Image (cartoon, rainbow, N blue to C red; front, side, top):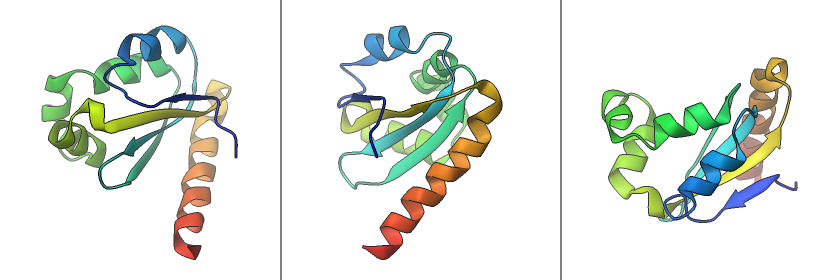
Length: 110
């Protein structure tokens, strides 16, 4: 599988992440470089969702979400961010489910 974009350090790549994903929809994956856990999501507006993730108040008010707890605990510099696929807004949930299934099966068979 070839990803669309890889940002190896989400802290140092923050401005690039926000500018390159303006008005785009798609599937993304945060990867924790410490424990290798992955978090897959989708958004109809990637820039807006990433602005939320880069807001510490958002992380603290959404501790029910694994990714928010992990970003707060480990820090942005310990996460890479991959845009797995850009897609039409209408396809986001369908494609997100596909990639969750895809990565889940890869982990299960290793």
